[in-house]
Amino acid sequence: MTKVHITAAQAVTAIGLTAVTTTASVRAGIRRIYEHELYPDEEGFPLSVAPLPSHQDRADPFDRVAPAAVQATRALMQSFDPTHDRGRPCHLLLGCAHPDRGGALFERPDDMLPVVLASELGGLFDTPQIQIFPYGNPAALFALDAARELLAREPRAVCIVGGIDSLLGEELLERLEEDERLKSEGYDNPHGISPGEAVGLLAVEAAEARTPRRPLAQVEGLTVGHEPRPYSSEQPSMYEGLTGVCRGAMLEARATADEIEAVLIDLDGEHHRAHEWATVEIRCLGPRQAPRRLVHPAEGYGTIGAASAALLLAIVATSRGWLDGLDLVLASDDDGPCGAAVLRRQWRGH
Image (tube, rainbow, N blue to C red; front, side, top):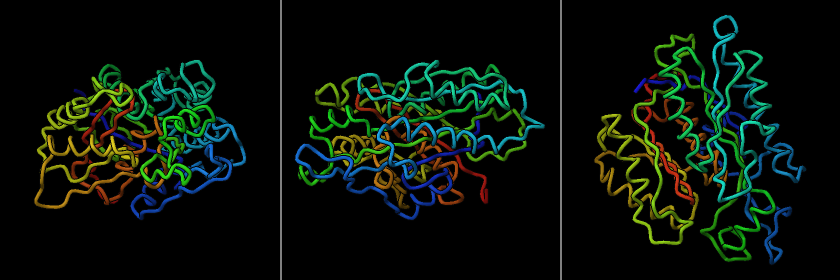
């Protein structure tokens, strides 16, 4: 498989307006999840939520997240050099919510948000080709896998890989409330989720492209798949899906369990996710003489759905010496999709 680099990353979350500030906030343990009066449960108690810090007066999640996505796209483009990059082929590969969950901000390539972001990119690159990956939490890993295939055929191309989502839509909140999955005083549920919203974008290029940008991370291994008995099926799960993709990514990377320095995962407080991770850890990683760092940033910026994997990848890419060596990114969705990637952040000081 063609080696690819993450050469730039941007994000907007509840704890940071860029990827760098989000990563710094995760490292510092900053949390911006709070009880918000605009989001009460059926008993009238405020839910614990993590909205984006800008445009909080806008009730519609699209009206908050879309400007943030444009902001992140423009910031990402600042990493490119018009002299070197103008006119390069470009692919916009965006992850969104799984269709069974509902509440997606976009679903098709011709929906407003992908078209607007492609227009922004078109100011520098050739007209971007848009693909949508409706796989929920691991959507950006599916998009990254597609980027590797595209760059094998078009090594001069630039792939913009991302995930954008909000769990703060009224209908989605009502559904989560009916399923008793929300964290609030009214439900006496300390293990519920805290809905959030986020944008994560990555520039991905072939290692052979010889761009003027120093790579932030190299993708050493990547596998995507599906859990045969996901949480939404209400069947007992053996967590074969995440186990399989974890093994696949480590096999491609030729990485032993001892070589994995850190694991970044989309744990968000729910019991079934903790059980899934514990099972995968036992099967794929096991004990390690030196402590292995476990990073689960949803405790700081909330449950962010289809933006989850994009943010985990961006955190590795912008960790600036905090996460070095080989890092494992894991993400799974309630409706079955799952993915794993092994990244090497080996360029210190960037």
